[in-house]
Image 1 (cartoon, rainbow, N blue to C red):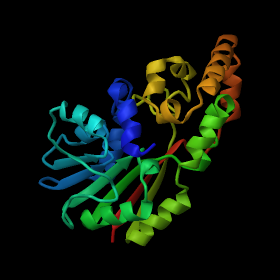
Image 2 (cartoon, helix red, strand yellow; image 1 turned 60 degrees about the horizontal axis):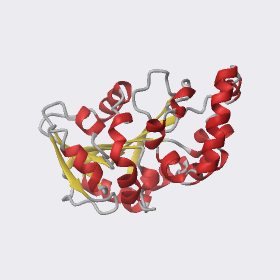
Image 3 (tube, helix red, strand yellow; image 1 turned 30 degrees about the horizontal axis):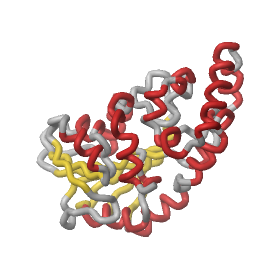
Length: 263
């Protein structure tokens, strides 16, 4: 399933569970450090949660996404953002148009990482920052979700670019990598993406939460999910879940910010 079809499928109720998290928004803003009267780009903006949250200032944000359904919801937000349909590999913007760009939890859906990073490099001004938020395979291997949904997680992990691949593609495009910052999911996370239930396993028992997560809605086997959910519910009721979660503790981080600058 291609990216636009995938997010057209889950986009119907996406906004109900995928809200801009306050802390993550602050980190995006910190790394991007937007200036007045400058243009900024959100690549793979989806329904525009983070785009709108970051557009509060004297600068112009653009959001681009291959899903028309997602963009239709984004346009309903009526915030100061220019929305455009398109993909990361073929950005419909002139050279050196943006002062910076972000991409949150989207690069694993891109068809060609090298081409996409080259396009982002092209449309950024000199010294413009590109802020990525993603999860790495080695991080996802430490999610306790592997215990309950091993096949779903295997497929999900396979589609994630490794850090070496991301760094290599950025450097090949001409970027200089400035910052790598691990992110650990907290118990007050407002954006219900894949590992949102790290400390709140009961979240996964809610169908609306699972519908907003591509791993559950598009990559998972129905029978495995049903078995895993029953086992999870039993372990929560019996108090075994704490032991399972603790056994997957690590210092790798759950997600990562990768900040690069056009040199």
